[in-house]
Image (cartoon, rainbow, N blue to C red; front, side):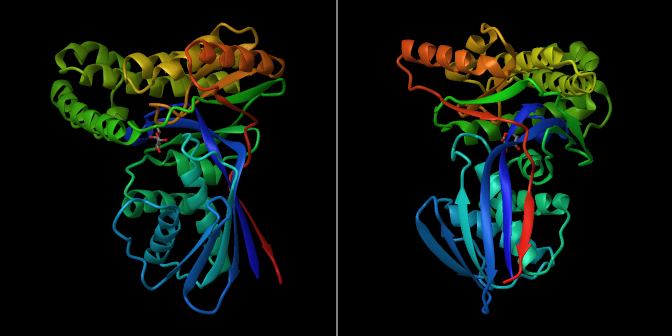
Length: 373
Ligand code: GLA
């Protein structure tokens, strides 16, 4: 038997830096995917060939400890084998072949797509039927505990559970999710890669997480009740006590609390077919990320400002962790060429490299197919 698993990258439409605060996110899968093809082999050994890196690697399923040193692409695959086996899903040996069309290092979750595709292919080949939600959790665990990146649950869930034509509304506390149809008949999503390397992303990401945790502790005291996360605080409450928090905890908390409320408003706007309103919330989200949460950068701000001034654009914001990577622009299909041209010119005027553009629809999440041989 041969198994083929295809998993997409993702953009986040709204709900940024809320997942690790047990809040709400609304990502969508994109038209760029990772494909993992697996065929069984007799010994408990996995050989992997990566088309993108042009190299092969192999490891034994009985020796899955992580090698010391820098994270390499193979660690994502070893990591999912490790969590699958630890979760009681014993794997058989396999030849695994990986090819990726998801831009790497741009904040489009190429690593979550690799994890989910590889885990799905290896699990199916070994005869395990895992629900996408369980697969997403095991991949998230691999990224946190094996690879050592402390991310929230959004990326793996978006990759595993998204549905074509819809956004995925995910409650990151209960993990309940809903597919909300995007009324995109005449509209598109334009992904704009700023091409700014996300060198600060890891350290600043961890710093923001620590700030949120510190804010929760102080807010518990100020509000006089035990809080588990910023999810448990309303905007009326933060209005009352923000001044009493030491900087920057007040503005960080305000951003997260307001962003959670924006996700609820964005879901309501989509359900009512109000795409203009959805776009307005995207602009507001970006302003919060820039001014309060401070995870944007001049290039991402320029993309959003330029888009805002272009006819046919409904909304725009940075997407993902920030400090470089991508922004998304929600626009009428005919406006894409004009937006691309204006952005190219605006970047050139500042002497910056031309951004990369990817036009996408809201795509399907993970897809697994089996072929008898
Ligand atoms: C990264 C993380 C996600 C999420 C976003 C910010 O993409 O992997 O879990 O925290 O940043 O919204």
